[in-house]
Image (cartoon, rainbow over all chains, first blue to last red; front, side):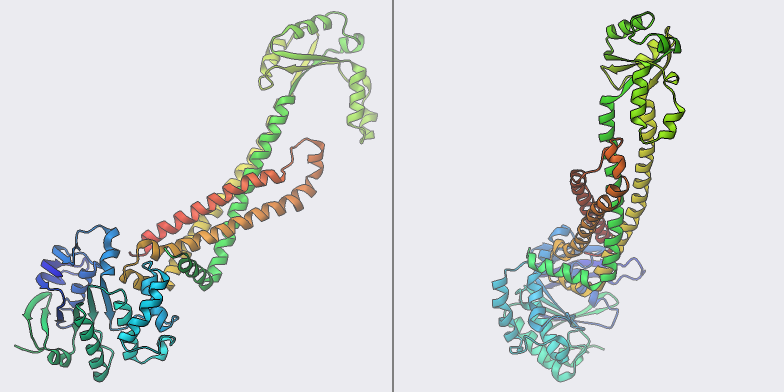
Length: 229
Length: 300
């Protein structure tokens, strides 16, 4: 599903590489935590998968895409197969919950009756049925993140990338969000989640890839956050 | 591509920075109105030129001796001159006008200015040949071959005067085009700026669109269309301005000149013919500017 081969990334403005000779493979349906201190390269890792960045060296494969070398006009196809969730939710404040989710389908040209059918379905999946007409500012942080997850998942992507999705949430709410991500993972969707949250990583007991100064220092199939330190 | 989606995005965008939109429309309008004005002047010159070219004659004025004594042009050198002209392959027709006829015509032309009529007596006007040419655009042939011939006082080529008139018009046209160009640069920069501001105010939408895999067309078409819509509105206003200018300025101020037939008037058809070009220019320029701006400033 995802394969990075000897990937290095050096930003023009920095002398130290953000990623250095990283090789990681993730199978379909896996749940992977990407951990490490700020500046360890987690975000760069995720951005490479989305082709927000291209690697300085090495190859990146996502699904059937040779990400680093693909034509620019095919990038939208790649991104349609990836859902994204962020710490700051990134909802459109002038649109309702349902409109926020529908937006993701509208802009890739899905027909209106499809949108009318799948938006309520996905809102039910994330537990927001009955709140579809609310505005984002009327919702709690956890609910807003659910909307964001619904938006990321509504097009049934092959994988879900979550960049610190619980970073702005309290522990209980975080736990709910993790249950939701687990549920999505059980549908066969690969989930990669970058996080700082020890307790979540420890309680889930999933694969952990740890980055430090741009290098993979650990890759445990059923890891915890703090081992070996 | 869902048209309703793009359309609503365009309207939101234009409403959201309405001051900028208005500025963009107004500069576009002025620039295009000037361009249109220039084009209309060109058309007027062309039409007037075409009319005059058909009617341009060469007048050969005869010496005082002939003017005073040969009323019917039956003696030499007048008669032989006439024969020579009539047999000239460059000449289509020759008409002799004696002193009395010239005076009569003079009185008609300056009917409205009795002071002038009092000053001029029949004796001060020469008899003349009015020569119509086969090729009206080549009066030099006649001027050269008849200058200095016996009995000829002077040869006047009407096209010289017209040329000076047209030069003046061409100057007006060039000036309008120059101002239009400066305005167009201002319009261009404003369009570019508006597109940037528009893209910036909607950066969250755009970033989400990119993330969920919207194509470049979907993310950028609304911005491009905003520029084009403003361009079209500007062009329509410019055309309205031209019509208004014709009705309230040209027709009332220059109405007399047109009526006298010295200049061909600009009519509705002229504006109708120029309008599509203004629209096309406006659409083309705003689309290209918008596109280039998006390429340069907005990340895909």
